[in-house]
Amino acid sequence: MLSVQEAIRVICEQTPTLPAEKIPLAEACGRVLAEDVVADSDLPPFDRALMDGYAVRAADTQNAPVRLRVVGEAAAGNGWREALQAGEAVRIMTGAPVPAGADSVQQVEATREHNDGEFVEIERATSRGQFITPRAREITRGSVVLYRGETINAAMMAALASFGFAMVSVGARPRVTVLATGSELVGVEEQPGQDKIRDSNTYSLAAYAELAGAGVHRLPFATDDPALLQRMIQQSVQDTDALVISGGVSMGVYDFTKTALGALDAEIFFERVSLRPGKPTVFARLGRMLVFGLPGNPVSVSVTFNLFARTALRQMQGAQRPALAEEQAVLAREVKGAVERTSYLPAQLRTDEQGRLLAEPLRWGGSSDLAAFARTTALIIVPQGVKMLDAGTVVQTISLPG
Ligand code: AMP
Ligand code: MG
Image (cartoon, rainbow, N blue to C red; front, top):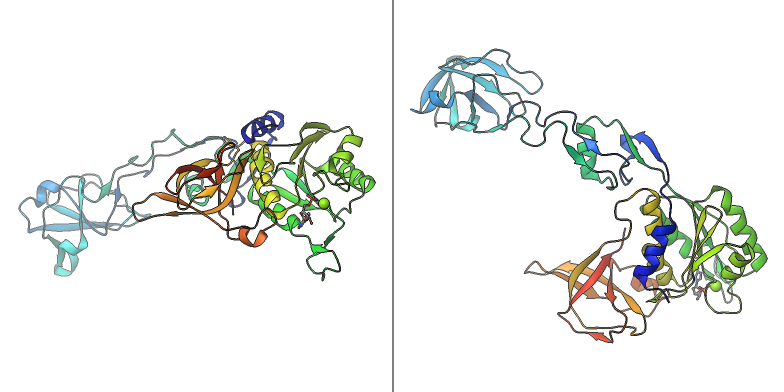
């Protein structure tokens, strides 16, 4: 049986990167950059005042308090074009270019105007460079600010805008089709009859797929009928990059996902992974469509989607590191492992008073416990072969998207 890491490697080997597309900047948050972002200007583009006050020559202020002649004004977007001479000051606003000849700014609080603004008294001496952000202090024209393969977040939007990326080249959105199987399923708007339950997986799967950057199409449920399932899988091929099927991958008499994939001659790369929850995970390809057959229990489906299907969706978009990153944390309470498989246990991460990242395991009733999972923000990884981990142990964790 493959380990989680081996399964992820197989997925990365089999997943193509989709072609890039150019989109308007306003739509780019969450997408994966398909080009390096190069600064087309210095930032700041000129020596910039950091305070409202007066631009002066530091040498003129050394015997402060001193009185200087106010010869002009520099506002943001409207600088003062002449050169400052000895004994002169220019009234300046935050964000305005510092005039030639000036080498410092004194903040307005340390000044006093005289004669209706004709003169200013500088009450304290300035030092050269004071309250000035020099040109190119933050970024030099031509340097790379963001790299291809990085995911654009809200903070990066400002960098893209500043360097004129009105259109951004990003990896195309993978087209995901979600198919829930199970004769027990009814819709969210229905009152479940005898032996039925409401489908919840199509909602969590679609939400996770969207968080991963995909465009999602949801099919109606398939009952546990191999011919129907086969037809629905076949029909998805033409417009789907990744088909995510929930349910029907276990060993039950009515688990037909693998039967249907077999009948369609899909190439099956693996059908079991050494993890809990989520062992019967299937990864296959039909034509150019990747297929993820995920176990139907609500926790299993979410865990396996994020470990496996999400990785493929990120790779399709050209992400540098498509799999969810692992992060070390200190166990707040002891946990038990599944021993024969690697366990992914529902948890929350928090920082303690000493600034350590703590992993707090959550009480849960197993892979169907969607109520406990609703409070889950991270997973604690307990490696195969480990029976128990004590409080205080440093463990690997992954944070779940969303
Ligand atoms: P399966 O993987 O098909 O054997 O399903 C395992 C368990 O998950 C069963 O108890 C199912 O009722 C439940 N389940 C399957 N599909 C869904 C779904 N779409 N929403 C909620 N629970 C489901
Ligand atoms: Mg089922």
